[in-house]
Length: 148
Image (cartoon, rainbow, N blue to C red; front, top):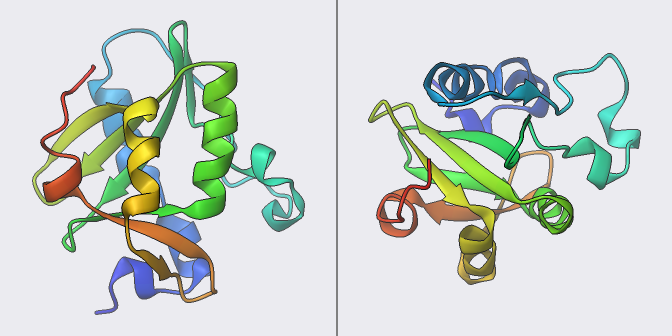
């Protein structure tokens, strides 16, 4: 079976986010509203990155971006997405929610703690050529203090 990151974009697009976002909605304490684009019927590639990477949720305290990790223990954060999320964070505090489908656990990471670490991480490529930072969650995230 092909690992999730090695599948084509269209295969990844069909499933990305569903499990992690469901776990966020199940586990988050406090009120939130869906905020980001969720597979809209328009060409995402034509949108500027700032709109394409609108954070997933809005709370009274800030924005929440949700992403999952699997068996390979790597958080794969597209570089253009990270740069856009930094812009969002400068407008309203951003927090990253990571769902670990292997350990069945989650963690909240303040964006201002995650963002400075990214340039130190290895850069890899998705099959369609999009570069991403590859973050070993056991080494760099799971020991981070949870804020949520």
